[in-house]
Image (cartoon, rainbow, N blue to C red; front, side):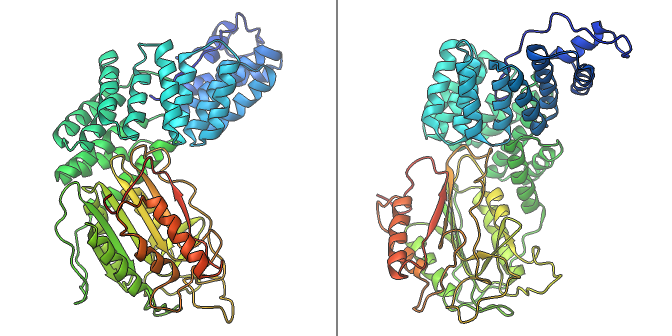
Length: 550
């Protein structure tokens, strides 16, 4: 349960036609009572609207309550539509709050913040509204504003367990684990029946390295989530999905993989409606697949260094360089790029899984092995050099045996970046993905006489739409691309690509924060390519991150 509902006063009387199946004494309360089941509420409100006897504030109230019914079902597009019509008829604090909450559940945080701002302006001070706006600020990654809103919510409603909990989540996101634990303990004291504070305390214990306590809290959360307190503003299934996913991550950290698989499977059973639950289920699906398939070691090249055993808390990297393509334009530099970056990462303490010129089977196996191990790392880095493509808005990394023929199963022949992101999504890990590749349509014909590039066509891709939206509210994720959206990454005329050459020079610089490091790389690439290539990044990092120690 993340946010609360401000209820409009019930209509004193609803004059309905006697021809309707329900009398007015039945139809009105069915529409305007919070505890009415969703389908009955919607049906009753539909019949009242169909009468066309109400207008103004009365009709606005009916649209509001039908929106509440849609909210119970997790149909946020219809919530927004009905709430918008209600606001047109009669602007009100409760309606702005409901619509803002629907935008929040869709992951559209900036629009949600605007609605909560209007709600605060349209009525008396309310702890509920400050709490809900805090949630939206937290979703947008502005934890200072989120904490300020939760402070105000707690001042107005000091016994609100959810406000204490969510302030704790925000403090955890900024690295204040002790402050987060204090807040969440208070939330548990105020309402021991809530599962969500226990889920979040489980995350904190895991971040502190106490896996046993994480599992214990996760188990109590799973038990409580089976019969959650009734609240129309809680997305259907969201609490039980989160409880199973976070207990599963704790089981994985302990090495109890059968228990983790059972939890991931349980997390996939409910139908997810909100952005956070969908992200949690994406993680559950990937990690269940990783744990369910046998580990198959592909043949190893004699010159490929083997990773050392990974200890919990270490930093881990996956480095792949593909250049020896059999059926599309081969690239000279990616293998050298990958070896240079792998060496730089090992020199600063990373455990590196390295792969050179990998076909589909080897690339998928190497990636899956890395994702299995990364659950015990506190920082994960992925570096890829080679061809990359976009199909239907998703980015894919291209193995060396790809054949771009019409009608072929092109998507299944590649590695999906979204699956890597879902497999890494975790509140206790920092993830950094660096792609020296062009993202483009593989079926478009290449331009004649074009310089060597990591493009299978002349057009690049757009940025990812989200970085684990709704799920990751912890350490954060950064994705760095060798080139800007819609542009081409050059393979280069020297021993390395322009981007990888600059990256290898700066990635090991002691005391250089990662985004400052990428700024130096960008400047060097722009100068070296005479503005033909401009590196670009998208970040949800929550603080300063250093690859090499200060």
